[in-house]
Image (cartoon, rainbow, N blue to C red; front, side, top):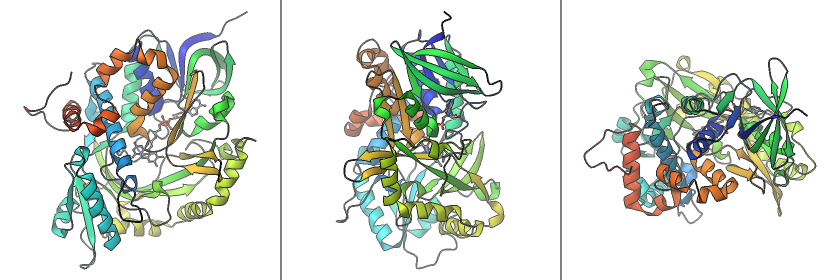
Length: 502
Ligand SMILES: Cc1cc2nc3c(=O)[nH]c(=O)nc-3n(C[C@H](O)[C@H](O)[C@H](O)COP(=O)(O)OP(=O)(O)OC[C@H]3O[C@@H](n4cnc5c(N)ncnc54)[C@H](O)[C@@H]3O)c2cc1C
């Protein structure tokens, strides 16, 4: 009987998640044999492409929805602190890799761009003031500045202040050491670095079409999208890093843990400006508040983007309703994902989220003039001829069973793993690429627990001298790690005080 090809690990999809996990596993075990399978003809063709996401190095510095305000006015900073330290974990991995000759320069994927929050009206200002008061006491946010001074704001955001009513009530915060990340360039650098090692392959134009349990692992069916030829590969471990399309593959695996999950796809659009005369006046990522009743992914922001050595501005996102799970997917994706086990939660979410669906449909129906009106709330003197509409990536939000409501919509990410640790999938979309390394470390601890605490422990400690929990509470260690990462990633110049932890 002919045997299938065999590898240790198959990773489905060549986005930032699979690329990160593959490189991490190869660092931990150089002898590991792995294959990344991608249906498009290059890496980072879906959400990880730089124009399909906003490229914000999410660190909780400017995203107002990470610091919710309670009815009594108190601001909860837990989420912002957690995401900030997760981003420091990502930076530790990228800093470690930049020392390797085969990884390339960090300048191609990470750039220093200040992160600002901007609010309008009395309630916005009192929220921002309270947020600043609480956040700036934490060591991760100690450098945050606050102002209600319009002259200062005009200096921080030269495009955003001219043309506003003289009596408008506004306020802003600024953190200078924010970043813009080209997650597409990062993904492709990771993949190139990966394939410079033996026994690590990336196969393009190949679609994973099926998954079957075998003795101790999985048989993965792979179809060549050009020739239609198929092959089966046996793997001890499978990662479903297929972005929005991870859900149908998880369902195809039939694992018990997949039951009850559904997906709610949300599309996106941006306004993009490449006019250098406009672009040069905005050097920041400025986040504001979402309109009342709109979902968290519709928080508007005006961003400097640094992609392939050029600067542009991006404004949005404008969310929309779709039934596709990938930008290059099929309108049948959503209907084909309905199962006996998830129809209850999906119907409950449809019934309880009519406002969201209405909002998304109204966003899709907007005219260019209406989109420009939203932009002018940020940049009052924006001219239509400088801006064009771009289609962003898809976000498939998670629908989950809920004992009380039947089903709930979740805006974060969730790692779903088989009990025996032989397969894992990443569902959801946010905060996404910035925290990839923490998510993949969680996967390693969940699916390879013995190795993570045994033979891989020393290497993990070498790459990650400090993980999220300790960075949240140890101010001195945070400052040391942060300073080291910022120098290693060329975000700041080295000073004599910068300590090395290597
Ligand atoms: C509008 C928008 C804005 C965002 N902004 C930010 C941001 O500012 N900062 C941030 O950190 N994150 C952001 N994100 C989130 C971030 O982009 C994603 O979390 C991240 O890119 C997901 O990476 P991934 O590898 O899981 O998926 P993807 O990059 O989508 O990769 C999945 C890959 O799997 C392939 N694939 C699918 N099915 C198969 C199959 N059957 N066989 C083989 N291959 C398959 C696809 O072709 C694709 O290449 C944003 C996302 C969106 C949509």
